[in-house]
Image (cartoon, rainbow, N blue to C red):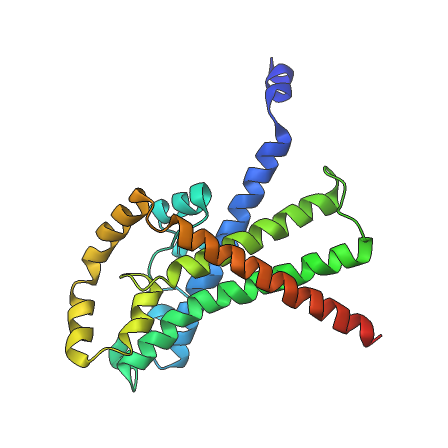
Length: 229
């Protein structure tokens, strides 16, 4: 019975799913730790006191946001607590803290793309499916894709996403205070917009553009490295 059960399992798909979960956790943790670290460097100890500078995923995960990442590749984690009263310039401090998350995802995606380009440059061909290198390539591709998706999604200027805090830096104080006061209701509207599919086309177009950009950049970096040998 145990052997027949084991033979019925598609181990390749299961392992691929587990790799996807690992890639998601890395993307989310890096994103949230970057928020907390930026706030800490700007003088706000709240994230550190709340253990949000930890690399332990348990401190950062939002169950529904994690599910969205698994299903569609766009999602979020538990928001990092930030107290703008610690910042010398609250609006710009909040904007920098917000930008740190998506920026860290793009850096992570670029590093994954650079490593992918290096592997292809060394082998000259795509790895054979099923071997260790191919699994690592699949993982890097998932890491790149999910990290780009997370970064782009959070740049949407819609509360409570990071993009709304970046945009708020350019608002008058009265409009800024109004936006912050009703930020908690933004998630309900955001879920409605996502459910209706209004963001599907621009989100996937933006992700495709960044894929092409990183592909071009890493190819150039690989060629430049070979010229320096």
